[in-house]
Length: 180
Image: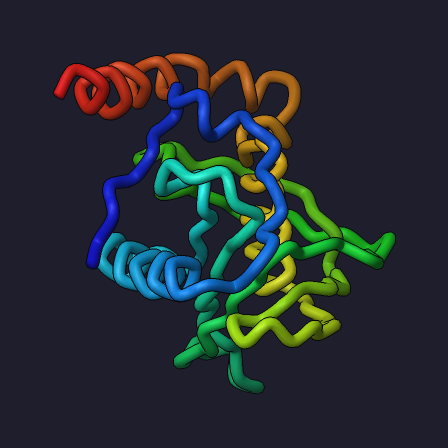
């Protein structure tokens, strides 16, 4: 079932989320609904606060790049109580957007490689390393569960140039949804 999105201006997007104590049927249903929501909105990642919940959960479905540079089907990944345990000093800049901040995009610098420790949907701990677009997506979604948005990672004139767009998103999406 598709869940309603939380938009820029919603206080839930600025909260540090709480750990999941137990992977219950409700948590499994939430993840299933998050997948439906991400797919319905053509996203490659989604975090629990983006659907109004303060759980340390995010999902990713990043298209994978082959040797020719073409993108193909990725793999759905579930991260419960994730922790970033290592990241590279090498960085990469990519254009990011966010389902919670429609129409706004910006160049964000993040580590090229990241290692994450988390639980999967079965409650098993895993450690995995991601690079490139996958690393950007994992870090973007991990930021969400810590109350950080991608626009917070943009500095200077580039960030200032987004102010009008952010006000418009807040007015057009968050304020209207709040009134319903």
